[in-house]
Image (cartoon, rainbow, N blue to C red; front, side, top):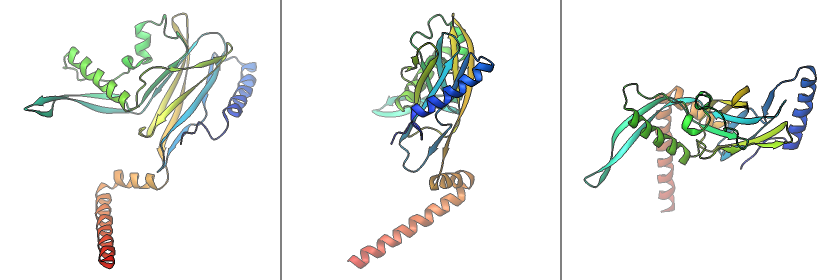
Length: 253
């Protein structure tokens, strides 16, 4: 089940912009943005969710939203067919790689932005920051990097194409960010940027927390904190289930 928020979007937007109008009357902010919820709660039946990001800009310009998942080390392996069998051969590990990446923008937002700016703010999947081995061949790095991005896109963890940011008039904007069922847990960073005249004029960083809740969370914590205990309990449960099934079949027989 996909849920944008616990409150209707109209109520959220109305409350936000009423608050924004009071704030800007005292001191104008070039960019204001917020989320419909700052927590994605992963329960046993979690199938993905969609959050609403909305805000306003003080002057005309383009809006870009970049979402980064918690960084992790990712190893990419190349398979080759040897004697009719596919086997892993070469591999490369990229450090500090975002486990989730999403970008959305208004139409034509990147036009005029120089390449260093796109790299600095990681605008576009080709500009996602990841650390390759220092002694690796540049061509090989690019091949493995492209494979990593394609794999993440295939799993729904990286944007295949930029999302759309809708503008209402000259100031208001909104977009949605979808988090699939396999979204990694951790702290996410959502960067909202205001682009104008080939430069980033302003930016705002918003945190988002993706966390397991309920019984699944307890099992997850035990498995990661006490792996030996979790293994023993799993064996006990499996043995108990086996004995119970055997007893039932004997009674039925």
